[in-house]
Image 1: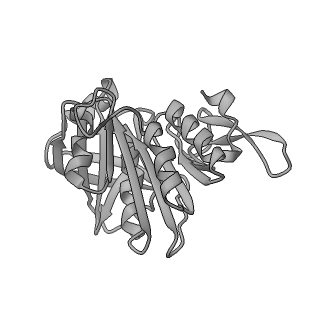
Image 2: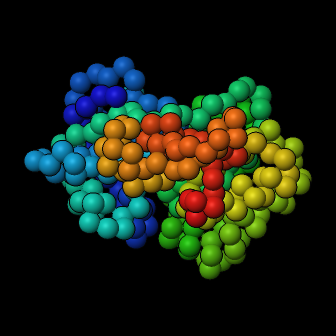
Length: 257
């Protein structure tokens, strides 16, 4: 974990409420993160606690990109930033996805859940990937359409791609193709349904959870979720520390959703 001073080098709204924000470090940093990790972004110059956790969308050289859904006061502050504005961030935080060469993967994402798997896609160049992404409407998925990585786009209203949820398309794809693992990120109800489907197909599923956080590095336990360990015992894990990436079969979904 590092406290890093950065400045904004790219700031673009891709849709009415989706922001792509790219920052560059002011000093060379050796490790800017791995797929699945996130940063706590400081929003106020005089309040340490005013931070928001954002998954890494991409890393290139000394630049870090974030995909942000603008939905409230904190993310609106990020929307109002300008090129060359200073931004203090803490990270990289949390654990990361683990992949192996030549395995076949299914990616399932919804909304800003696209971000960590976009970064993972860069590391999986030797893997065969099928990617299903969804959002409420055309506006919410246009960044994914532009990126051309997702093979199947779903929207609730049918304004882009297929009409319906990503979970409607997932069984069809798992039936057609023999995927080794499924990786997913998005709203908790979507992840729970993806888990139910993966159980039917006996597929390993790894999910990246989204959560409200206090500290972001394991001290406050404000982001704890109930899990079951290898002994069958119930305990709690912190999304910011033991996660955000979890084996979906370890999560007690009835407590989360």
